[in-house]
Amino acid sequence: MADLLKLGVLISGNGSNLQSIIDHIEKGSLQAVIKIIISNNPDAYGLSRAKKHGIPFVVLKNGNFKNKEDFDAELVRILKDNGVELVILAGFMRIISPDFIKAFSGKIMNIHPALLPSFPGLHGQRQAVEYGVKFSGCTVHFVNEGVDTGPIIIQSAVPVLDDDTEDTLAARILKEEHRIYPQAIQLFADGKLEIKGRKVRIKN
Ligand code: GAR
Image (cartoon, rainbow, N blue to C red; front, side, top):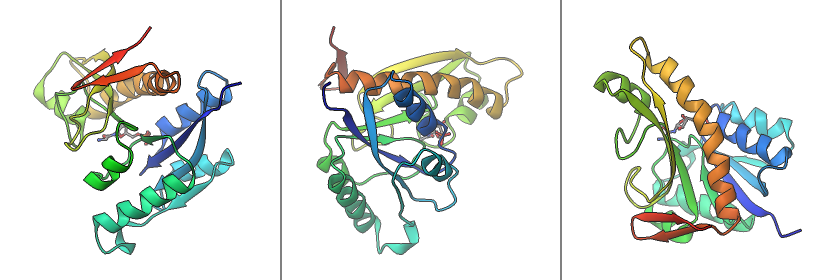
């Protein structure tokens, strides 16, 4: 069997995307192994998921570091020490620094709850409801130095209904997130993603 792709998963909260990645690994539909989970929030529910599945985790508190650069240097050290080959941002609510991006160039993925480039930044679902779009969705993309601007790997669209609230739309989008994030990771594991400028080509 080929070596499993080594993942480092960064979370800040509930960790339902983390759970979906764990589930796909456990049922054999994702050929990867989570080497380390890192949370910047000691109360993140995702940490209970890590414990339940016996996956190593680390908490890095924002306040324990002098600045963003020191925090990110520690992140990079932990990820490298664990031999991480692909960094997965799964509801990680921090903007990462250029040095971090350089250290894992082309090897950091993020999931965003909107069809980028629409509604980047915080509260993508609320922005979609307030704007009045008829479709929204989610985007898995490689991370570059902008906020939610990196090359897009997979998107999935869902309808926005007349009586949707931020929460009902978020739930509909989340189902799709749980489907496409493991898919994008598997494509990476299979060596099928080729980044060319802004575009990601999926090789046959
Ligand atoms: C997800 O909806 C994810 O797309 C979003 O946070 C949620 C995390 O949920 N990420 C962002 O908004 C990043 N800008 P989870 O902790 O249950 O996976």
